[in-house]
Image (cartoon, rainbow, N blue to C red; front, side, top):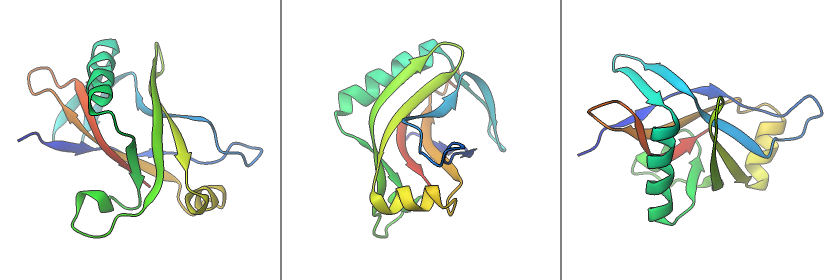
Length: 134
């Protein structure tokens, strides 16, 4: 069974109060996973991840407080509609927010997101995304 990992990053409206169209979900490079070592996000990892996401053929849910990995109801805050790799930046997602979630974000009631993801055991490269939580 694959082991899922979680990381945390900040999000929110720009200085004009508008939500961005694209969000940097995984910055290019390595990141330290608390107690788990490093994970790697590079062009190779992005290509494999995008291939796996495409093969699934479904939108990735953005939920509240990681509810989709538990046994509770998990209403969506939004859906990842598109992914792209940008050299020097990382893996970005275009998210279609629900009206409720957009309101929370604009009011800064939620400021962080946390993707749940999988890495390849051999080289710790990103290979998949389960969900993203506010």
